[in-house]
Image 1 (tube, rainbow, N blue to C red):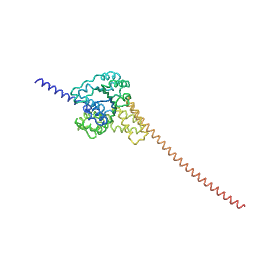
Image 2: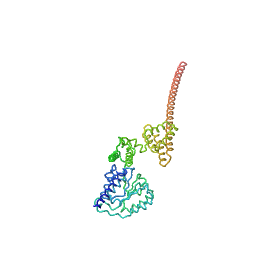
Image 3: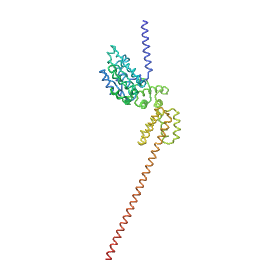
Image 4: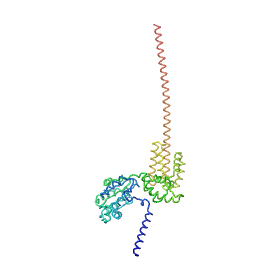
Length: 410
């Protein structure tokens, strides 16, 4: 009896630990889709993968698309439906290629796992899952692998294709070498639309008892720009901060601050300083702006959206401002000083606008001069025509009088 009680207590303790670990999980992992049916907005890829499940004969696969669109979740759900929760531990190898990107990883980890003999499934697994006779290697962020590593991987894929399938996941398919991409069946993952993302956030907020003001979830989607992973992480962070509010609700202003978005009033002040074309005022304001800790990258993104979508500016100004902001963003990505680059960008925009206004004024003055010259030339031509007509009339009169004189003389 005591042994039975001890077994029951251990079982209860294990269940309690499992529940506690699930509650302490990040929401991105906690609410990751467990089945292919849970994947939304990727109907084409899910339909094809379901068909392959029926035959259990997978090709090598290449998933590509923007981050946070469900690429990793899809292949993990597929492997669980293929092998089940027990067999998946020995049949699937998941590597993040951004951390392990050298050729040594392909020669050691990948090759060693690919050449292993396929483990035999249990009777229970065979009854409930397809359990095909091969393993699956998942290489996440494969576009970060070096060209040499990708070339070595090509040979490994060919040699062990009988017992191993590869799934490459990347954001940019152009960074995958052609010999490797041609060996894979390609699946494009598009950015999630607003309706699917919003319904998922509402589901998570309901499960976690999160309160939010109207427009808060829409603000999360606007900030995340189609990245559902980023949206769920921001929702979790905001839920912790909302407990300090009076009404325990998430507000759009808090979301902007959490995401590092520069508030609209501050952005309007920067735009006004640029429009004023006072360089000393811009320098003074950016000094204060940098001390407040705002992100220079966020300012560049928001300025780009303002100038490009504003009808007040013509195409030439928009092109020049875009080139300035693109160059600044590149330099910030390379780790340059934010304050210096932001000052340089704003002053360059001021110079571009000043030059454009000067050109417009010159063109207007030239047009006015052309009008005046054309009017003066027309008046002079009319006067010359009148003088010529008068001279012709006088000549005709003189000729007639001379004729009369000749008649009289005769």
